[in-house]
Image (cartoon, rainbow, N blue to C red; front, side, top):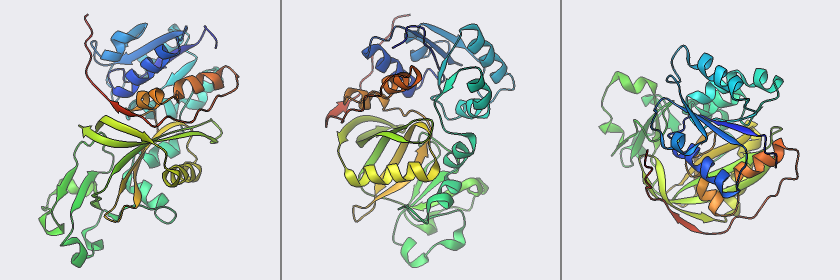
Length: 315
């Protein structure tokens, strides 16, 4: 593994970036880890070799500032870990690759589908198992929905922000904010996160299934790595259908009959990345092997249970 690799991680305060740093430390990575975040005290920033405080990703000068950092630090690998900043990197993916910088992520058109729950449903509903989804009250089966819960989600939301659950269709208030929401049949069963890695040609390399045992603010704090051939095949087929590239995080949940259904796809490393690393499958190490032109070692995940806890950093 090359010592000259310099990795840039965005959204350094999020669990995904922290998981990447811990995964790199686990393999004794000898390159440099550069992080960016709008918070000068982001945990990942304090764990990296060098952190830069940058504007919020929706600021007009965000990309100019980030580009300067990429050139200044001679970055050759970029791993975006935030939902908003990933769009900037995807829009500039081709230009960055021409400079010899590896950007491990899907193309912008795929990312836009994944980040819009309504578009994702339309793209996948005819080929895959998904909960009933609509943006229109007129589409509801009133006899069914009167007796079953409805979950309302922002079309472009993440991290469980803005999600509301209603006892039935009739409990949904008339409010303009729901014009930009989707409505789905509530799924009461087990919830799963799948960490999946493809190369930049879209070939699936690894697929690790994790049952989410406890979730707080959209982040898994207790998880169990399992082998589930049905879910693994579903996710591999979905990845090929959408032409996903790089690391992605796929969410599924079981209906009342125990049938797993897709909820969403996050086209980036997930917050539970380090859970997968602890199970013996280090996506970050595999990405480095691809970049360095080395053989990619694909391990079978160990079936383990992981409990996440807080740790302190003295500044």
